[in-house]
Image 1: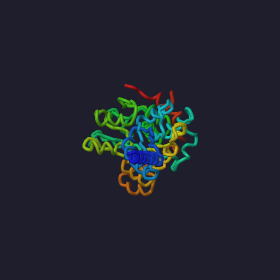
Image 2: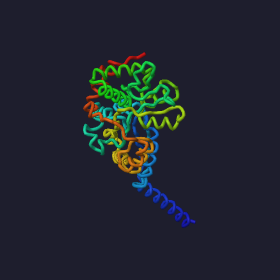
Image 3: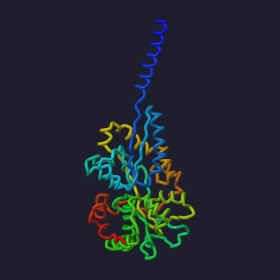
Image 4: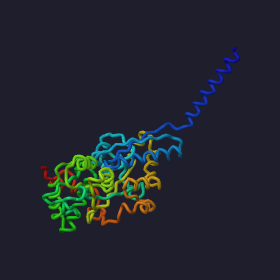
Length: 337
């Protein structure tokens, strides 16, 4: 009896040791928080699942990625105020720069850490109309007509709204000559805006679901999503001039170093440049940076007359100071009805 009991105890002890060794050999699961802007919700659902599979196969470690979405400027402020982001995938480099200037969450040269100035995908700004385009909207000019109501988010809180604003400003500056004419044009445009939502997705809901407005100034990818969901209710057109919108990504250094998640967070952002992720980018109507994905999705992303922010406004710091800072041009011209 003693022999059988001792043998049983040995088996149990051996099983416990084996379980402990397997536990030691398998890395503990890790969770990342990706703080992003409004229209990327669907994109990152699929990106996150693909990265989790890749990381598990490569390292044996389980990883889950939580998502946070909202107006890009508001999201940047949330990180500065303590939201525990491992990565920030915001709508524009200017919002990401704020993470450096307000608390040193990232280094000043953060854009040099990944290809294409840390922008793994791009988009542009288009005009979404009601089905059949009943107001006959063809270009930016039509958005200042007295019979047209415009839906666009608030550029004080939304990165997408800043792209919208600057695209309209540059169109007017080129067509009518100079910043004074551009200011007058954009003032007329915002006088036609009945409500300013805090983010692009909220503005999309205002236009498509609540039925407000005649035209919605939108990300190209958001326009395609609206067409998929409300195909019999909306159309969209490309204006004669628009801006190349280049959302940027970064690890949030102070957070990943404190949490010990730098390796997986950096791998997550590098994954965005892989063939698999670039294909997902194109599938969700963003403009990929890889030549392979660009060729695959060329039909849905026509060549356009696009300008870069550097060509028209110097850089995001200069544009933000002139147009979106307190007392800047937006504050001066916006007329709330």
